[in-house]
Image (cartoon, rainbow, N blue to C red; front, top):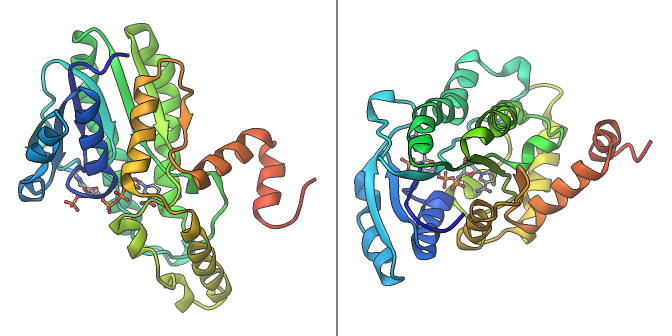
Length: 271
Ligand SMILES: NC(=O)c1ccc[n+]([C@@H]2O[C@H](COP(=O)([O-])OP(=O)(O)OC[C@H]3O[C@@H](n4cnc5c(N)ncnc54)[C@H](OP(=O)(O)O)[C@@H]3O)[C@@H](O)[C@H]2O)c1
């Protein structure tokens, strides 16, 4: 597609969403950067203008349908807003955590997307880009709530890709690895699961893996450029990486059978 018309991003107050908003504005879209607290975006229009772009800020909480307004003329929707919570084993994760994570990461995406589809169709088609996580490609213990919420968006995207193609709406997914944002910084901790009998080794292993992946961390601006490339490339596959670690995970997942990949990830070696 050509970088024309309106692009709307959720969770653009900071982190990857903010960088995507600025990148899409620099590429030529008229950007609507949405966020829960408008003050977080006070400098965004000026920053976009500095690179010749157009950007406005609008309030949107993906868990509050009354705040969801889709601008007429929408060509691109980026579902980026996301949270992660306590890293617990399933048996010790309260249902309330499943519900709150899914409320933002999955139901928020569903509701914003559901409302955007007729507007995208009226504009002659466009792109829906879902930001998930390469974490859902690997069997990481203590991470099931976040992974399941992102895998659900992955499945949603597969159906939407088929369902919306006749309307000229292309669906792409970006699966980030470690991106230098508040979310990544907050994950640099011993998982809460360490406090439960039988799970301490997993928790320590997860923290060691998290720290090892630090060497592959990329800046949000670098990841945002890859997100914009996937949006603009009409031949982009459904699933796209935006950093080297995410690309490696996606390649391994694609190149192996699901059983081989699982065994490799669990350290049991190939079949
Ligand atoms: N950073 C990574 O390493 C990484 C890796 C894999 C996937 N991801 C995914 O990339 C996306 C962006 O993450 P990030 O690293 O930029 O995270 P971040 O720095 O924690 O920023 C999260 C963004 O989501 C917004 N948000 C949270 N709940 C929201 C809600 N109910 N309505 C609207 N906005 C909401 C936050 O807004 P407030 O400022 O109002 O809180 C913030 O703008 C997420 O979907 C995340 O799961 C990130």
